[in-house]
Image (cartoon, rainbow, N blue to C red; front, side, top):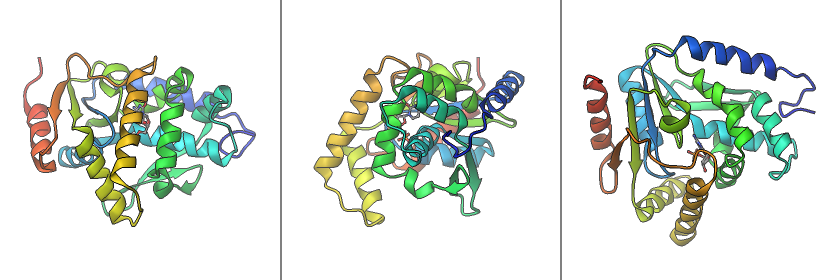
Length: 249
Ligand code: DC
């Protein structure tokens, strides 16, 4: 059984066509926005993409989707080869629900809410440390590069997936502020957590993402660093848009 609930092997087709498309789209501008969880990159990336009228790639959602699809198929997070298969054959689609929020459809099921849970985040972080899973998702991510442009949000957008991107940003914020932002989000959703446990989780996730052997979280050498601690979202958006409006070398 594959991760999309079928016995078919559509992954060769799914893998090849994005690879061909990605080659054709090398001239399409890309803005990469990398950073740790809670740095504000999701919110900033979505707003910047909307203002520019560019496409948006939430690469973390791909890792989360593979993680939950694996869970649905009772695949153990230590079973690397089954997880790689999942990375190839999980159907992942993004749909605009009209309110500006992107719904994520995993194997035909709207999994948007499940994707945002801490469990999905922890599974994504664990499978993201497997080099073959990252390789399997590479061309799928590059296929998002379509005219008129792409805003790509993640951890290795500027270093590995789109190293030739003309615009690169790396967002940071203090761990305390990131935990506080997450706390507010979860509280709004009625989820009860403590600041202490969130801070511990954030620090553990940072350490795992930054210390893994493959594509560790780090800024590209040509990325512009923006510390968002204490900055309102609009101020960060303005700085990023300013960067894109400047002529490139
Ligand atoms: O951005 P996020 O919280 O949705 O990401 C979930 C996990 O996926 C995170 O722990 C790191 C991993 N990830 C990654 O390794 N590379 C990416 N480009 C995006 C996410």
